[in-house]
Amino acid sequence: MSVQEFIDSTPMGPRQRLVALLGLAVMVAEGLDITIASFVYPHVMRDWGTWMSAVTTTVTAGVLSMAVGGAVAGPLADRYGRKSMAAAGILVFGVGTAAMSLATTIEVLAVLRVVACAGLGAVAPVVMAIVADSTPAVRRAPVVALAFSGIAAGTVAGGLLASTVLPDFGWPAVLALCGLAPLLLVPLVMAYVPESVSVLLARGRPDEQIHRSLAVLLPGRDTSHVDLTRARHDERQPLRKIGAVLLSRSLAPTTILVWLCYFVLLGVVYLLLNYLPLMAGRAGLTAARTGTVIGLFGAGTLGGQLLASFGLRRYDRFRFLAVASAVSALAVCVTAAVETGHTGMSVLVLVLGTCLGSSMGALQAVGALAYPPALRATGMGWTSGVGRIGTLASGLLGGVMIGAGWGISRIFLVLCVPLALTSTAALLLRNEVRPTG
Image 1 (spheres, helix red, strand yellow):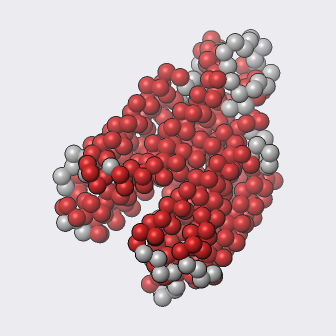
Image 2 (cartoon, one colour):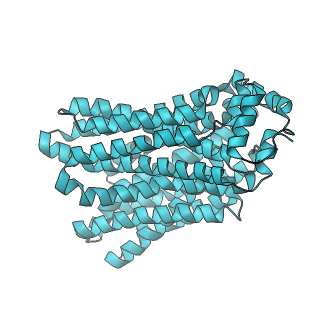
Image 3 (cartoon, helix red, strand yellow):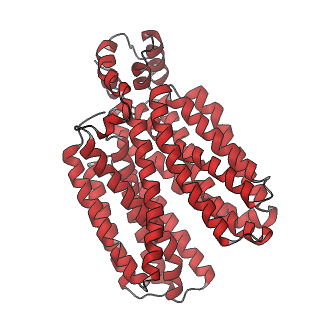
């Protein structure tokens, strides 16, 4: 049997579960880092007298850095090793965030944030590729969705940390904590995560090293009957043109549709997060209750991603994404059209977060499994970069619509169109994506 058939032929073992757990922990650290930075900026403005324009520039540069980090790290991980690239990304964003606690000017803080964001952008796609590589086919989609839910969990944890630790210890202490804590994961990743076999095959590593990697991932299993000659032939072509293959005739339709889904879905989530406070204010909610509503959106997103993990065990990932995106469009329409008080707004936002979280979880499974194993990190890295650009585009588009005098309800109603487009793209992907393992 081939290497992939060998991995797929066995139930998920303890080491594979540990790899998935470490992937979840890394994603929690990433979500925590991204969230806590948004709480720090207002304190920086107050303490240093920094202009809002400087903070906006820092945030924009950080998002672009994340896009570049993912696009660069993906091909490097596929060519030179995913485990080492994941560890390097954790080191970069951990050290960069911790160093921000020592900054005394907005210029230094901005440079360090750009460095940290490059690491953040590199980590997510590479870690998702590692989790997918290590999981048997029958569990691959739900486990990838579960690991990705760590970002939403980190977002919730970041809000709690900001409300409890930041007022008493200050923003430098919080940055130091959020930067140094993830560094504890680096030795665990290096010690317990085996290198992806597809990368070893593409790099032409000796058979003994490949068998050792398989033995680490699946201890106690006989690997002597695995056909490495066939596997080396399958992985050789992607290594030559590791980036161009994504836009080759056979994969270009898949790539374009996956990019479209990421661009639209991440852009919609970002726009909603920006304008939910305005909608809550329109409903007459106080600042405290508005904070509760935003927290419910985050909790709903986490719940939706966990729901996707369970749902993908039984349902086709493309249909799940299509249905979740369609229901998200309906939830956005209802949220925009219905006038409610605090309780009604809270329920609507919780439902909306759950629907969008389910869409995001299913989309991660679709993106991670859309490409052959040897191209997985590259595909995820480039796709993640496109999604980051989508968040910037949605922010600019939201500003244009507000400047044109559009109301919040009208903006929300417009979002139903791209969500419906995502649903359609998911169904088209079902016909385009070939079984890759």
